[in-house]
Image (tube, rainbow, N blue to C red):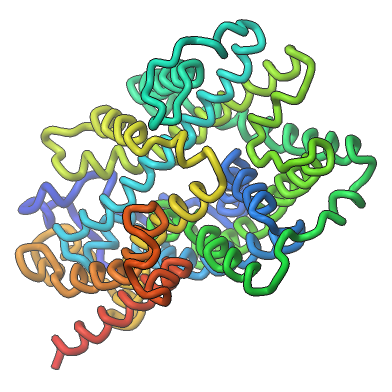
Length: 488
């Protein structure tokens, strides 16, 4: 029997407690196995998943190498997903509260902000996808949109037509923030029905266009040696893990509603690796087909739409992509960071202001540059942020399973008590976090071309290929050593 938490117990620390952050009582936990399976299937069916798979083909893999990489990556990230989900299901607490046990009641804002900034990045990417879908449709009906005068510097890599559509779609997203989350429910239902149908239609088109699956599956790997293959495989695998690195931290936000531990564990096993792998196969097959049909791989489905002749067909598809992306963006990339920003200063930042902050940061990451080629998508974005989130996951899992033996004292998570550490911050957790990020910094700087490749020894820059794994184990191991030393 867990401790019951009364509001009176936390009245002395109102900044740490709200109805949204309070433990979910057992009587209100109703999510079963199939709810979690459905959640993952819904989240897996999105344009970035398609691009994730097709980018591996564009990078040189054949179909089975790409599918195996995606399956392995999702099977690996399933482990921290289930482990972190345990605390949510046991105590009914969300991610920011769970992080207080290891980082401190104030220090928990550090991992929360890291997660929020990544979500802002995803918001920018999804908004670019939706805006570009609008552009692909409008340019068919208004060809002048393609030849508008260039108003941005060449270094921005941003044409005027796509920029206008991006801003329009961004404003639509901000209007949805203004209306509130409830307004998006119907669009989520639309997405759940439309995207699977559209994906299968695209698969059937690819199969018909190249006269069967045979030619698609016979596309060879572009790697001429095992050395070249593994040089691409390991960062790609890290990118696959990084794709869900955010959710592997804040999964307690969902598992706090689980009817049992078995429900969240089985549901995630059933839903995550199979759904991601199945939808990724469509991206792999279609991208392989484009190599046969057009002589070069087209990894972006919105660019592929340019090849279709029917204005009506392309318009319908692009409107549907835009609506689907809008629904995903608000649900997956606005709600969480908006609340994280609001949690920084509840008196000054409400949900709307948090959503607007998310939108502004989403523009500042220049998502069009990340999406311009698969190397930017995988090596810069996915691998880059996995180097920040892997260390957080390592610290939280070590703290919960080894230090605390899965036992938390709920009242102290909401007031000054054993999780206050030093002025609300666990300095050992923060030190372990920084030391886990540090080994990946040289490789990141080389990847974004901030420094030359010969600035650091090769073995140091190559650690970046394993960024999530390096950060997870370095931070987790150092945190364990420092906490055990404290006990002595």
